[in-house]
Amino acid sequence: MRILLVEDDPSLASGIRLALKPEHYTVDLLDDGAAALATLQAGEPFDAVILDLGLPRLDGVTLLERLRRAGNRVPVLVLTARDGIEDRIQGLDAGADDYLIKPFEVAELKARLRALLRRSQGHASSELHHRGVVLDPGSRRVTYRGEPVSLSRREFSLLQEFLSHPGRVFTRDTLTRLVYGWDEDVESNAIEVHVHHLRRKLFPELIRTLRGIGYVMDKAPRDSDA
Image 1 (cartoon, rainbow, N blue to C red):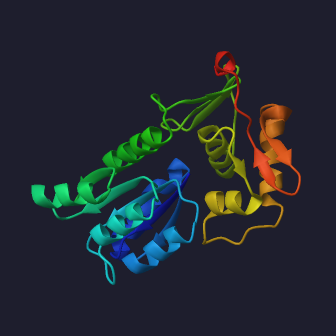
Image 2 (tube, one colour):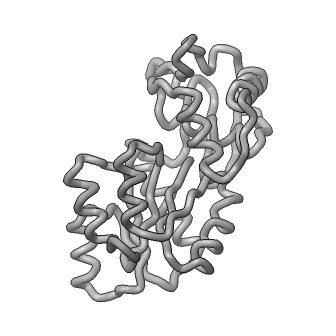
């Protein structure tokens, strides 16, 4: 899952990125509100945004208001030192989906992020199911027909994107940005290799190639989502 972290405190931003890396999140960082708004309005694919309110160039509340007025519904978790009830109400009314006061425990940040993503995807449970495949974001475990499956961090991230959005067509470029973000040099065939490995470790029909377009995980009938 790809997260945009908008935070101008370098130490805190580094700590959050470090804490989320073992959770298989791809975290991209911006340190001012104007750049974050431009990036989101340009259509960069993110599953969620972690947003500080006290930002240079454009404050977080204004960013939220403009984002929501433009119809962008990306889930937003606000992180801020502003702990007054009026500040929280202002942030939520501007369009935040959740609110966490600094300083905070990393475990709570992770739990709130998992819950935010779960709600945004319409899942009552954190587990994702598809034709015998079960992915648990909390424990970072994947099973197929009850048997554990060992995946690399990138394979896990890619599978989570497909399971979270069955029926959605992903281009290769979109998947590359979701899985790798901005900070890494990526081999041109990296996504093809990951898809091949997922098919081999799970089953060949898991992900369908749409030639010249990208990839899709077809929606499964309800009675086979187990």
